[in-house]
Image (tube, rainbow, N blue to C red; front, side, top):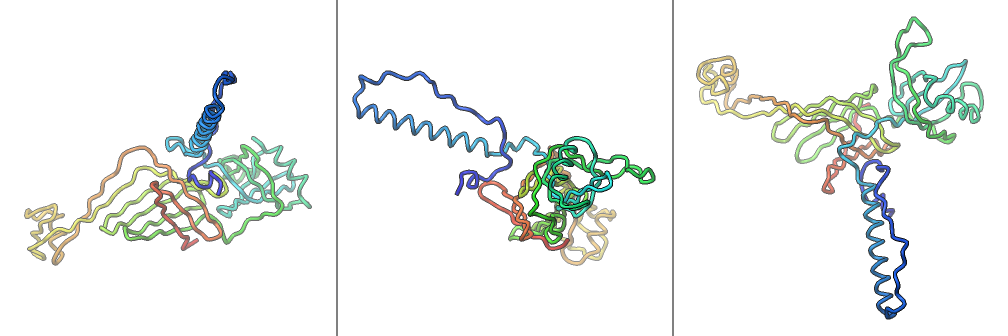
Length: 303
């Protein structure tokens, strides 16, 4: 197995550390042969350790760096002086702006296409922006801006059965998590703990690479459900947050028989979080590495 496959992580961080070995050759002619061989072995071990360290550093994601969610793959078509792009991840079609790396994309497409309007699979880095439509009556429309062309592939095509959008669910002994990826590249994450707590977040998602997805989520809103013993159930004098004063909260708790349940919500503070997922599109699976060799598997249940 390749080293990069053994080391889980995000995108390779360019400009990793470089190690320079001095070109000055030490004088070893007076050193006994067995010591020379031992010294050579030690140098080899040091160089090996440095190379492994460099590989680990290059493959370890910088969690403070926000990875660009700009990878797109889909079908590019050109007809009647207008280009269109069908996004494989969402199934949506976008007009293509004639800016950025568009001209190179059009030239390569023309060299590959078999006929007018023939779709060819393309991989690129870009973003969706609101731009004026070719038809004035439509105003501003979502438009693909190609930042960098990665390449065309005549042997690939979009498969509607493995689009990224949909609802993914993960369940284990600690609770149930639901992730909804929407076609406008927004998302929601909900977690229902076994202890009755609930967490909800709204954020954004995107692809970093063909098989790597990232979520950008703000701090969560955590709702805790706490049982409250109510000896005076039905009397309106509950022991809830309203106490025995008969306020609305206390009355609501007292109106329930036995133990009542009240909710308290708190908004967690802090910077946005970035979650990385491995994409197994053919199986409809997203795998999140939570660190310490712990993975959370999300399976698609609904489109």
